[in-house]
Length: 177
Image (tube, rainbow, N blue to C red; front, side):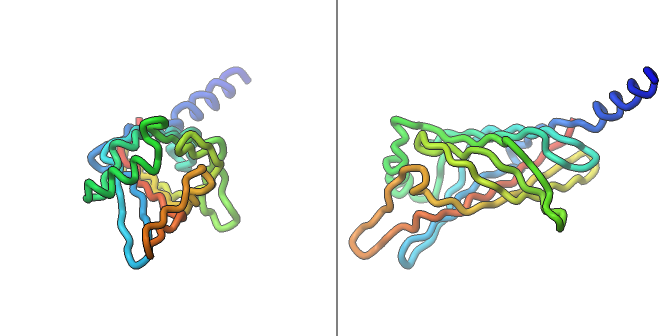
């Protein structure tokens, strides 16, 4: 019996893995819309960690964090306005941490946890897709959020209004240890 328990424990440990995030292949983007206009912004730098079961590609723990000063929309004036809107001098960063995961009846994987922006946390659910190619693992997800849920005002300038609903998309990739 002791040998059987040891074998089960070793098998469980062998299937657990931590993804070493490759920053050159991973990204975190935000899609935004305004009256007659849309744009994407990307975080030039962010930190992320993911661990889980290598055999089933089920995440066990995941988190991401970033500084808003690393947000780049390819337009410096817009970036400055976004930093002011985010009140980045008071709350310079944001984060998300997984608190749960499950699969639905079709096999779609979901993760949930609090997203913190502008110092306000709101639980979100993100559908994710995990893939493994040899030792390389990737995790992709996207979710719509409403920025007013984080206490951020709706931006209105003359006849233009920025939609408070934005799409957050990410791709994390790297070898699993």
